[in-house]
Length: 110
Image (cartoon, one colour):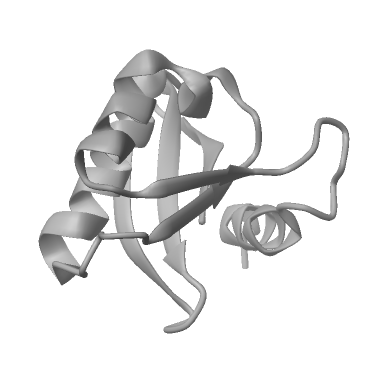
C-alpha cells in the first residue's frame, strides 16, 4: 500500500512516499524528494522491493488514483515485477484509509 505526504523543512517542502506492508504492519519502503512525482513513488516501491526481496509475482500494491501511481513510469515498473496495481475508487476516502491514517499520524508533532 502506498501514499505520499508533504513535510515542511527549513529548505521548503519535501515529499515522503511510503510503502506499507499490511501483513507486517510496518513501513517497508520509502523515498524523499522535493517533487511529488512518479519517480518518487517508483523509488519508494523499489526501496521496499530491494530491502525485503518479496516474491513480487502477483504481489498487490494498493494506492489512490494519484497521477504518480497512474504514470507510465510507475505502471511499467509494476508490470516488470509482475506487481498487480489496485487503486481506490475516485472520491472514496475509505479505499485507502489505512495509508491516509498512517500519513496523518506521521505528520503529528509531540
